[in-house]
Amino acid sequence: MSRERPAPFRFMDCAVISLSLGKSAQNLRELRDRVAEAPPESLSHHFFESLLRPVFDDPEYRNDLALWASRNLRDDTLAERLGVIDPLEYDNIEALRLHVLDVIEDRLSECTQVPWAAPGREFYFLRSQMVVLDTGLRADTPAELAQRVPNLPTGSIFYHFVEGRRRPPLMVDDFSAWLERWGKEFDGCREKLSGIDFHLWSLTEMRGLLARSLGEALERGDGS
Image 1 (tube, rainbow, N blue to C red):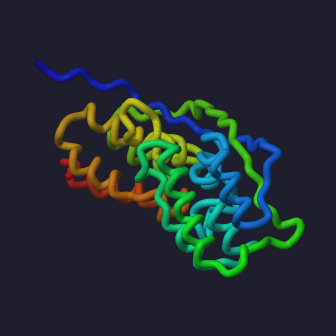
Image 2 (cartoon, rainbow, N blue to C red):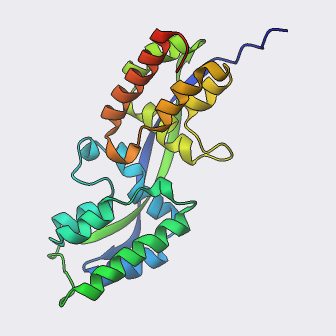
């Protein structure tokens, strides 16, 4: 009996609206206190949604806290420690919060003076409201998926490849989840996709890596 053909892949786009929490930090001790009490949505904004902002197309660091530590606290040691944190390594936001607090506490214990930002350079805690839109684009086959990816807006890359990995119950990017329905011949392709670390690349770079991985696998005709 032939396998039922999967439903077409629906390409979505997204954008975030940033909302202020009315909380800020001017020094490292205040940053620690604010991180400890910030709602999960705020930590998510500063570690994930920052990718969607144009300033992060080619960032020095991959999250807002690391960027602020470097540019405004002038503490490159702290910035590097915060910058290497991969939020997808943690089971949930609370586990991420605890690790961030540990990093800040360790740095505070090393400093003879608490690092301060200049007036007007405070860290402002925000949260995001995501707006998701249907692009109207569809892919009926894996080959069509590969053809569409190079021209997708970066918001689509974020929604399907970054946000998808955080979305229960699968916790896997949408492209891989869809390819799994086409059978085991695409296991190798899915493995390649899972090896693309969003923490290391901008959305534009990720789009290129996704396109290359899909294209090379499908050219061979077996997804491996």
